[in-house]
Length: 107
Length: 124
Image 1 (tube, rainbow over the protein chains, first blue to last red):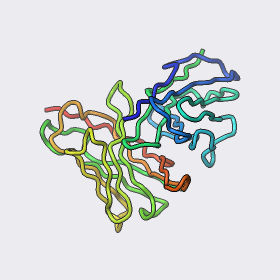
Image 2: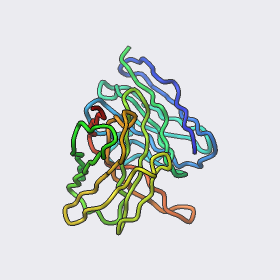
Image 3: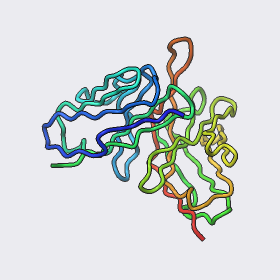
């Protein structure tokens, strides 16, 4: 099975900050990575697919990059509604697997 | 707008069967993959499996012997059953639609719509 390791597990940031988080796969997975935002009590929301493709309806402040084993999600200017936990998902190989999450908190 | 909503008992006794249903509105069950994912308290997300088309399924080997996922196309629903549950099956269970695209000679599927999740506790 492919293991996805996210870092950091949590970060504190201020409104307006640029925020970056990473995900590393235990083996090469080309660009078959999605990024998902999760807020308590709300349905998860997929932000990015194919490592850098913006899901329909997602604002362009979210961007993704990477290929092979290393992937990055960036939020260009953090807003109050962006405080949440973010997960990466690899869909290169079954069983599909998720990273452990990065919790973005208010500084 | 596609919406998914999980329903089912919030409490299941050990050794019994956990049964959940996901109601899909705003779209058809045909041509997509319909998934279940769970998250135990304080732990990470785990993909359980999917059903698609005429009832074809794929499951996570970690759960395969105890899990079944089925389609109820006339009612626009799909369901999850987990047999012989233990406390380790306590989790928030999510249903999600798997969309797909073609590339490098095959299809690739990720989740584009999710339900809100429902907590199932296994306890006597």
